[in-house]
Image 1 (cartoon, helix red, strand yellow):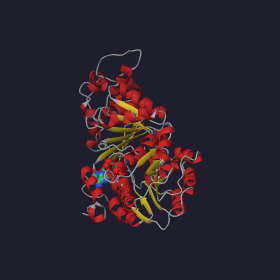
Image 2 (tube, rainbow, N blue to C red):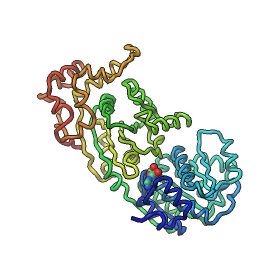
Image 3 (cartoon, protein in one colour):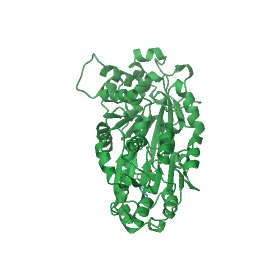
Image 4 (cartoon, rainbow, N blue to C red):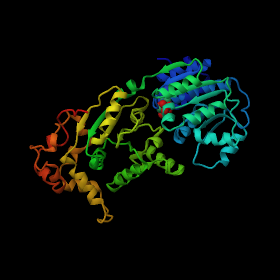
Length: 471
Ligand code: AMP
């Protein structure tokens, strides 16, 4: 296997990589580093989790150090555009980590925080500026930033930029850059609009690709669970009951949805935090830190807030709702199975989301294994736990999962999330009635959640056995 030295990286970088414990380059690094060192433009198809940040940061640091000169006042030598502040912060951290022996300056600039410190940081000029597009435009308009001497321009997560409406600001920023420069584009997918933008901004780019859909997706155990929209919270509670759900990133479509899910998890004793655009920078950072430290087991996020969340060891990604944009599915599941680890991605799909699922399967060119959990009597205990936690019951000192245990003696184990997938898929029950399960008619379920536990049938009823639901 190629090592970093044979890619042409200099000693100060190699020792920083050694300190990080990186022994060999990832495929995107092996492909990109020599090309960037040569000064080539790059069009890279790679998603987060493939090591793409180092793929551009390492050779950029080396190039800047080789032609050392003072950073231009109010400007930078290298500009990296990132769609979100989280990702911008992480990219800047990566530059600092890898470049700790190089003596180059790194500044990060994004919206939602005060202008003053950013203005001061830019005034003297910086070697590497990492920024979100909106705030950078403000600084350009205010003549706080002048990018006319930028030598290297990086556009990261270009497809996400498109989804977030940043293409126009990117074109505006690019107009202020000098003609003569090196350009590096990275995108997880290649929508037409991004292809067009790349055509305008890149010069004879070398194309590098790690075919993320194939490689990353292969390492992720993906599942679809069909469930009634109104019973998603009960199913989520049941999934979280599994000890294997150590560090779980949960996606919702809306900010309010993220708050609601985090709160609901809290009521049943699962430590959870929400992270989205309405939270202050401080709140987002605290939530992320608590999640990284393992103090909260579940982080509930919207797509935008989750961009660039780089947390190793995310055991599961749960899509509480499917994204409207199929490409976001790939971004979401890419938060697990990072840097070679395995991971699991579970999506809860209600009837009105089937069209979205169809699009996702088309874009990712795969059929995701699915299980039908609609009309599932086994969720009665989770529903009972929520009921018990709801006012006017008032606050009580108890482990809510005990409630579930009391509601259905002996059930918890069978409903541990892993068990649902450990065996063959369960039989689909069209019409929702399974004569083998006592009280399985939907209306009877909520009224008499205890009955089924007495009726036995846990073997089939616990989500085991059966056929794949068609999508
Ligand atoms: P990225 O795709 O840039 O978000 O990187 C994903 C994760 O992989 C980050 O946590 C990096 O620290 C880590 N990483 C990047 N390159 C390597 C490498 N060559 N060996 C081990 N870990 C790496």
